[in-house]
Length: 332
Image: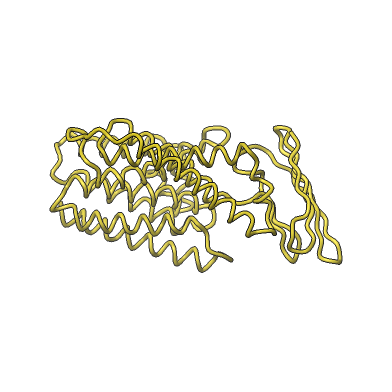
């Protein structure tokens, strides 16, 4: 069992690296999502190394790596699914294999039940999935694939929740067990949360100001700044509590990491280019999964303007002067 688990863990780490190479061969520019694949590879390789000497840590690292690879692989699957979906499925199998090493029998039974649920949920779509073999891994990835049937942004929420849980489990692997919890120094915990919140806001603001071709700086409204500060502060608070073995630390880390990763990987609504402009459905703090209508026009001097209308009543207008965004407005 140990040899099989290690083989699957190393194989899934290699698949994560392969996904990075494949995505880079298609992408026009690097994406923050590639860091998730890199982190998954590191976590899975670490699980392969530590599983025998420290099974608890190895299992947690394997689960964290599988969640990171599953979330990133599903999110990237819209353009590179023929590689990222199988890689994510391999990571799930590796994590379950690690979980069954030196574990009670009920863990193996839980794995069997997990597979049974996946088969039951996809039974009606197996013929359609067989027509696109790279989608067959959804049988193993059913917690994420099933979330896409939730109206609105259910699938997107599930993906980032998986990534946030991966961060929390990675910290938990090196945290003090709850039985040996020590009371934290709340003054230093509050200081770290404050510093983390301010640092994250400063980082995002600097990044937005450095990209005048995008709407990032116009999207730094008070609501966005407050959400960014709260997300980073909660993440820092959760990590401190988790490392001290205090109950509640894991939940706070998941919540904070989910929000921080969502903000970091979000793209600005508009980006001006030499050939016009690229647009999305709106800023990250106005998530939407419904109908969107976009219209735009360009001029001979390199300018462009456009309008984005959403079915929820939000309207976004913008104007580009070559590669500089000069107007951006959101009306609700």
